Length: 177
Image (tube, rainbow, N blue to C red; front, side, top):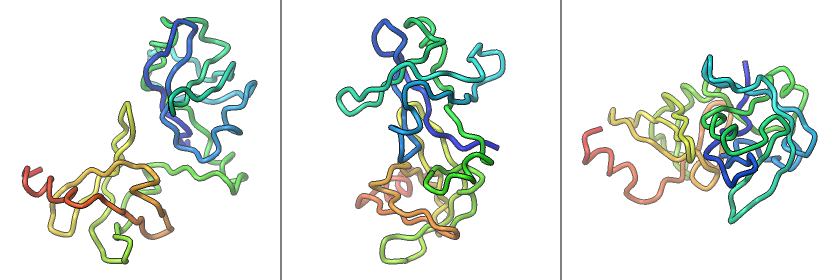
């Protein structure tokens, strides 16, 4: 099993850079120049099983990576949607790594910052811009919460804390989703 470190988004520029949505608190270390990173992608997509970091930079708050194996924009376009991953066994030897797999999140109780139970995590929806936690609220409504530290500040062994903006869950109740 693998832990997702980042999800590759759209190409940036002509020299093979791609945007990435980070799932690691240590991008400077995980994506240092020369690091070899495993990938997961759709079968037959042509994405290499491993990529070597050629460059890393932040542009307007967005992380951009380039890989030795991908020289141009055309190649970068083929990476869209692929995940940069870390083998779970490797992560177990690294206590500082804070990344979570969907299997680890499923079934966790969802609480607000005051400790009130809001529901349960029923999935992780991976998106091109950001991932979202799928939550079944206590009243049976399914809600989607951006899986970012500002909204999901705590992930514990048996629960997650969701500090949702006011009215977020009401949107799902009103829409009937």
